[in-house]
Image 1: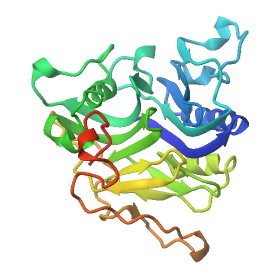
Image 2: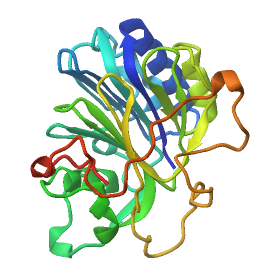
Image 3: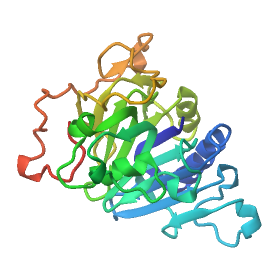
Length: 301
C-alpha cells in the first residue's frame, strides 16, 4: 500500500530539506502515485504542505523558477517556505487504491487537522451520512469524519471497516496523534527531543543519518499514541481499531504480534533501552483533557 514517515521534535531548516529529499527518494522507488508532506512549527503556528502527483519530480519546497516541464506533473504547495524550525514533519508516499489525482495525494487538510494514512478503510455507517471526499479517497473521507465535532477514534469501529496507520496533526493543539491498526509502522528515539516513525526500519535508518537516533527501530502494536508539541510521547492508549473490512480479506501484517506498546523481536542492548510512559487506565477519557472539551479533538481513545 502506501508508506508513512514522521519526525517529532525540533528540526532545523536544513534537516527538513535533507529528510524530505531522502524520504522522497526512497518512497518514489515503490510509491508511484504521489508524494506529500506537512511541516509544522508550533512556536509560530506556521504550516507548509507540499503534494506532488509525480514523486520522481519533487523539487525542494518553495524553490522558484523551475520550468513546468521539469515538474513532471500536477503539484500543490501551501506556504512560501518551510518553518525555520519545525516541531512535526509528516511524509506520505502513495500507491493508489482509487483514482490517481493530485486531489488524492496525502496529506489532507480540514480546518486545524492534517491527516496522512497508510491502509484501507470503508464507510459502514448510513449511506446518507457518507463523509465527503473530492475524488472518492477513503483517507479524506476519514478526515472529514474526524473533523466533525463529536467523532473520535474510539468510535471508529462502529462506522468504519478496514485497517491502517493514521497520522493526525492538530495544528491548534500542536499535537500529533498516531492511530495504529494493522499497517506496518516502526519507531525510534532521537538523540535530541522527539521520535522518528516510518513504515520500514530502513527509512528510519536513513532519517537517522540526518538526525541521530538513540535506539534501533521497533515495531508499534495496535495503539493510540499522542505526541506533545515538544515531540515527546504525552499519552498512549489501547485502541479497538477499525471494524472488519467487508467485501474481502486484506493483508494485515501487524495484527498477529503480541500485545503491548512496542513489540520487540529481540531485546534492545542496555545502552539503547528506553523508558516509555505507562499506558493510562482504559477509561476512554485522558486525565489531561477535561471532558467538556472532548468534542472535535478526534484524538482520544
